[in-house]
Length: 389
Image 1 (cartoon, rainbow, N blue to C red):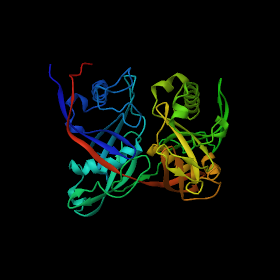
Image 2: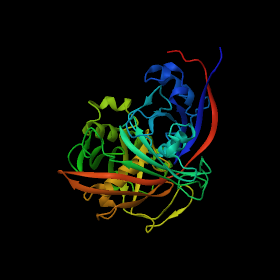
Image 3: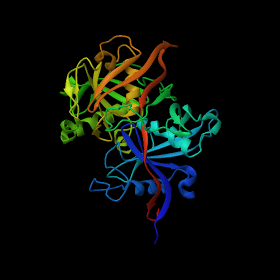
Image 4: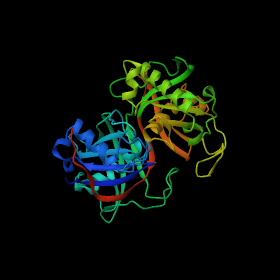
């Protein structure tokens, strides 16, 4: 028996990292969706791992580092690249294809340019390459502004992103029309609902489809103040179980699942987050965040755990909800009209721009923008044992 060796690139995008593939480099049977592709990517990451370490794979045993990306020349008119994202479960043989990874989006443009997936006529030797991405999971357009220098992607620079240790070059990412293309931005029709969770309680909730389906709750109603770091939540099994029940009931109310049991097979979406007015705290790195540094505080869970920073797609939801008067996010941010918001998360702060308007009897957001960074960590081939399905 010999291992299969597949061209791959290990990249950081925003506060996440994952294994990137060109579609045509995958074994033929894995170039289409199905059991073979899933089995291959699970083995690449090292899942399922009952030890929760990903010792025998490329994963990092957290939701931020157990990710896979498949890119191809776009089949969509006026787009450069098709971007498919797979969130790999750590302890289960499962890949969730239901949503996007906003952080890794920052690396998509760079990978696409370096692999020749973008028309060379659109890529300047120096300046900014504008890469139009078709996000195949959620059928949305994303535009990445990738810096170029001497004909190559510029990765190094002085842009600092809380949650990432070292500075890098800034990549501006725009999420165009981020609301759910198949439904309303607010699937229940309300900016705030009363979410009844059997055995847990009843909570005010803003449930929004923007960037990624997200359920926002008030921190105070959950017994928190919004300054919590990972250990305060992730070391509390009862709290994690409560959040999963809230997530399941919210998914049902949003119409994402037909019954509560289906939530277990849709772990990546929706996200659950809680918000609070500004309050001083120290981030996970020890950095002081003052009340003047932020408009509100947000803590979000991903794949059953409190995220160490903020998911890019959840940041899109935060920016969108903050721009719409009446949502819990907007209320926590002072209840004023705004076209950008800076929020505090466990690793520091992040600014997101979004402008909302009310038209045709519904709220609309043209685009949400934020700055991230990306860098190649390793490139070559990834080795996996033969796959038997």
